[in-house]
Length: 576
Image (cartoon, rainbow, N blue to C red):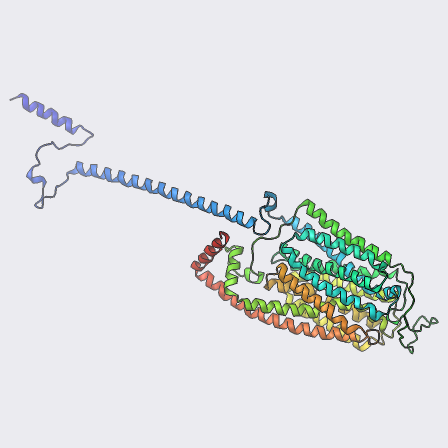
C-alpha cells in the first residue's frame, strides 16, 4: 500500500512538468466541471491552449489572404500589360498596317521642328510658284501675241485646277503624304520651266492647269502636316508657315523685275510720251495686239523652278532620314480637349466630345469656315495676282518695273506682318488678331479708293496697309478653325477647296481691270466686310459653346463614375 501512492505522486509531477501546464488526468470528469446546462468549464491551462490555437489560426488566415491578394494583383497587372500590348498592336496598324519598332517611336520635338523648317521652306517655294505669274502676264501676252483680257483666263483656269488639287488632299489618307508632296513639287518645277516656252495660248492654259493642281494639293498637305505635328499648339507654327510664304510673295516680283521688257502693263497699248517719263493721260486704251517678242522671262522662271525643286529635294532628304508617321487615333478639337480633366486619354476625350457635342454644330462651323475662306482667301490671292495690272491701270506715272517695286513693298509688309504675328499669336487670341487685320485692310481700301488716281504716295501706303492686313489673316483664321474643329485631310481639303473656289470666281470680276481700275479696290472692301460678318458669327457660336463645355467638365469632375464609363468605352473601341 505504501508503494502505490508514491507512483501516483511521480505521475502527477511528470504531468505538471509537461510544457509548464498541468494536464488533467484522463479520468471520468467530475460533476463540478459542468454547469447545470451541461456546458464544460475550461480551466486556465485549457484557455491558454485555446488562445494559442486561435492566434495561430488568425495568422495563417492573414498570410493566406495576403497570398491571395498578391495573386490577384499579379493577375490584374498581367491583364493591364496584355491590354497595353493589344492597344499598341491595334494603334500601330490603324493606318498603315504593321510598322517597325523604329516607326512606332514617338517623334521627338527636335524632329518636329526640323520637319516644320523644311515645310516652311517648301511653302516659301510655293509662294514663288504662285506669284511669279502675276507680274509677267502682260509680257506673256506679248510673247503669245494675245490681249491681256484673253491671257487673264489663265488665272481663272489655274485657280479652278488649284481647287480640284485641294480635293486631292483626301488622297493623303491612302498614300504617303511625304512622297506625294515631293512628286507634286517636282511637277510644279517642270511647269515653271516650260511656261516661257508655251508657244500658244492653249498650251499655256494646260501648263497653268497642271501647276494649279499641284499647288492646291501642296497647300493642303503643308497645312494639315503642321496641325498634325503640333496638335493644339500649332498657332505660332502656322504663322511661321505664312511668314515664309510672305517672304516668297516679296521675292517673286523682285526676281521678275529685272527681266521684264514690257513697260506698259495694262497701258501697254497706250500712247506714251517720253519727254517727261509719264504717260499721256488723255490717250485711250486700244485693243491692238502687238506681235510676238523675244523675252528673258525664262530666267526668272528657271530660278523659281530651281527653288521649288529644292523644296522637293529637302522633303526627300527628310523622308530618307526618317519617315513621318501621322497620328493613328482620332482626337477632340483643342478647344474641347484642353478643358477636360488631365487624367483622361486622347481617345477618351474624343469619346466625350463625340457624345456631348452635336454633329450639327461641327458641320455648321465647317460650312461657315468654308465660306469665310472662300471670301477671304479668294480675295488675298486674287489681289496679289492682279496687283501689277491694277497699278499700271491707274492714271499715275507708275508702270513696268516700278509696279514690281510696289508689289515688292506690299509683299514685304505681308512678310513683316507675318513675322510679328508669330509672337502676337502667343499673346493674343485669334479673334483679336483677325478683327484688327480686317480694320487695317479697310483703312487701306478707303485710302486707295479716295486717292488711287491722284497720289502716288498714297497708292504705295494703301497697298502696304492691305498687305499688312493680309499678313496673318489666313493663318489666324485657319488656327481659329483648327482650335474648334479636328482638321483632318478631308476637312482641310474642303477648306482649301473653298478658298480655291474664291480664287477662281473673283478674277471674273477683274477681266475689265484695265478699263476700270477701281474694281479691284471695291472687290477688296466688299470681300473684307463679308469675311468680317462670317467670322463674327463663328466667334459668337464658339463663345456660347465654350460655356457648355465648362458645364460638361464640371459634370465629369463631380461624377467620377462617368469618367470610368468613358474609359471602358475607349478600351472596347480599341479591342474591336
